Amino acid sequence: MTNMQQTTATARGPIKSYDAVVIGAGVGGLYALHHLREMGLSVRVYDGATGVGGTWWWNRYPGARVDGPGSPFYCYTFSEDLVKEWDWAETQPSQESVLEYLEYVADRLDLRRDIQLETWIRDASYDEVAQRWTVETNAGERISCQFLVCAVGTLSAPNTPDIPGINTFAGECYHTGRWPQTPVSFVGKRVGVIGTGSSGVQAVPEIASEAAHLTVFQRTPQYSIPARNRALEPELMQHARENWEAIRAQLNTNPVGMPFKFSERLAREDTPERRQALYEDLWQKGGFHLLFSSYADLLTDKEANRTLADFVRGKIGEVVRDPKTAAKLMPEYYLGTKRQLLDNGYYETFNRDNVTLVDLREDPIQEITPTGVRTATGDHPLDMLVLATGFDAITGTLLRLNPKGRGGVSLKEKWSTRFDTYLGLMVADFPNLFMIHGPGSPSVLYNMPLGAERESAWIGDCVRHLREQGLGAIEATVDAEKIWDREITDLANTTLYPLTDSWYTGANIPGKPRQFCVHLGGPLYFQRINEVAANGYEGFAFEEDRRVETVAAL
Ligand code: NAP
Image (cartoon, rainbow, N blue to C red; front, side):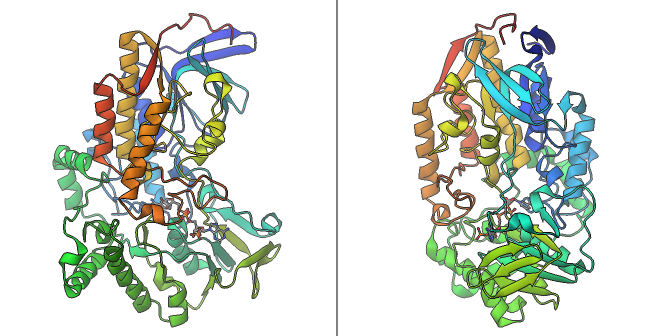
C-alpha cells in the first residue's frame, strides 16, 4: 500500500491525489484517519470547522454534556495508552472536556498533519473509468482519491424551523448546534428557548440560572430522567484502567456498546409494588439504567412501557409544584421511542419564578417578530432566541454533501424516497464510498466512538481485501440493499420505535421519507458485517483494478 500523497497537473489545474479522503474530523473521522493511516494509506481529512471534534466542536451551548454511557466509556477503546493517560473528571463529561479529549487524541496520534480545517467539501463525484472520486473544496481545490469515507456526522445538519418571521428577529439568535465560539451571556436578558429535546433540556436549567427571564416554548413534552452527573470517583477510573481489556470485551458484546446491565426480566413478572420500588431505585441511580436495567420488554411491549411512563409522569407531578405546568410537561408517547433524555434539574427549573412554559399545542407560535415570539394568546418579548430545534438526523449531512455516483446519479436522487444502504456502510451506485454511522448502521443507538472504531476496522479490512486481490472498486448491489432494508425494518418492527414521530423515523423534517433507519442489532450488526466480509463480501460487486498512472484527464 502507498502512503505517498501525489500532485498531478491537469487541464483544470493541479490536483492532489490520496488513497483516501475522509470528510469530517469528529469522533468517526479522527479514528478513520488513524486506522487507515496505520495501514499505510495516504489519507487527507477535511472539515469545515476551525477545530477538530465534530459534534463536540459545534454544540457548545450551555449544559452540553455526554448523556450516554458516561465516563470512562464514551471514548476510543482501542488504545490502553489513551485510557491510561486521560482523566475524566465527571460521570457525564461536559462538551468542553470531550472536545479537549478529542484534541488530545488528535495531538497524541499526530493526526493534525493530515487534517485540513476550515474546508467544506462542496462537491464529490465518482469517475467510473479512473475508479476514483474527485472532491472539490469551497476554495476550489480539487482532490482525487480512490476511497471516500464520509464521517460527516449523524446530528450535524441543523434544523432551523420554518416559522414565519424567523429571520426578522432583531435580538441575538442561536441554534444549539451552531453555538458561537465566544461566550454568550444571558445575564439580565429575556431569553426564549424553542425545543425541548436533549439539547433543550440540557440548556434550560443553565440559561434559567442566569437569565432575567426564560420562556420555554414546548411543542411535544418528553420524558427526561435525571443524569445525576457527579465527580468521577478515582477508584472507578483506576478500576477501568486495570481491567480495560475485559471492559472492552464487555462493551463489544453489549447491545448498545455501553456498560449497562440489561435486564432479562419482563415488567409483568413483578408486582406493581416491586416494579415501583425498582423504578424508584434506578431513578435515584440516574442515567439510562432506568430504561435498560429494569425490564427487558419496555421497548417492545406497550403495557410494560406504560408502567414506566406512568412512573416518570408521576415523578414530573412530584417535582413540578404548579399542577398546571406539570400537566403541560406530561408526555404521552411510548417512553424511550424518542431519544431518551437525561437532564440535570430540568423539571425543577419550572419551579423558578423567572421561568415560564408555553405549551405550543394549545397556544401555537404564529410568528416571530423583531422583538419576540407571538403565539395565539399574545406576545412574548425577548432579547435572545435559542433554537434547540434539532437536526436533519442521520441522512441530512450526507444529503447536504450530495455525492454523485455512477452515471452522475446524485445521492439526493438515489435517496428521494428511501434511504437504501447495504450494511449501513455502502450504497449501490456509489462505488468506493464508505459511510461511518450511516443509515442502516447502529449509529445513534450505539456507543458512537466504539461504533466508529468497529466500522472503520471493517472499512480498513475491505480496502486491504481490494488491494490484495488486485481489485479497483467495490459496490453494494441493489438486491443486497433490499435484503438489508428488510432486516432493519423487521428488527425495528419488533419494537415500539416506529410507532412514534421522532427524528429516528425522520418525522421531525417536513417532507422527509418516513423510515426507521437505525440497525437495532448492536453486536449482531457487527457479527453480520464481519460475516459478510468473511464470506467474500457477499452482496457486493467488484471491478478489477484499472487505475491509470496519470490523472491528467481529470
Ligand atoms: P431534537 O431531539 O430533535 O429536539 C428538537 C426539539 O425542537 C423538539 O422538542 C421539537 O419538538 C422542537 N421543535 C422542532 N421544530 C419546532 C418548531 N417548528 N416549533 C416548535 N418546536 C419545534 O433535537 P436536539 O435536542 O438537538 O437533540 C438531537 C439529538 O442530538 C438528541 O436526541 C441526541 O441524540 C443528540 N444530543 C446528544 C447530547 C448528548 O449529550 N450526548 C446532547 C444534545 C443532543 P417536537 O418534539 O414536537 O418535534
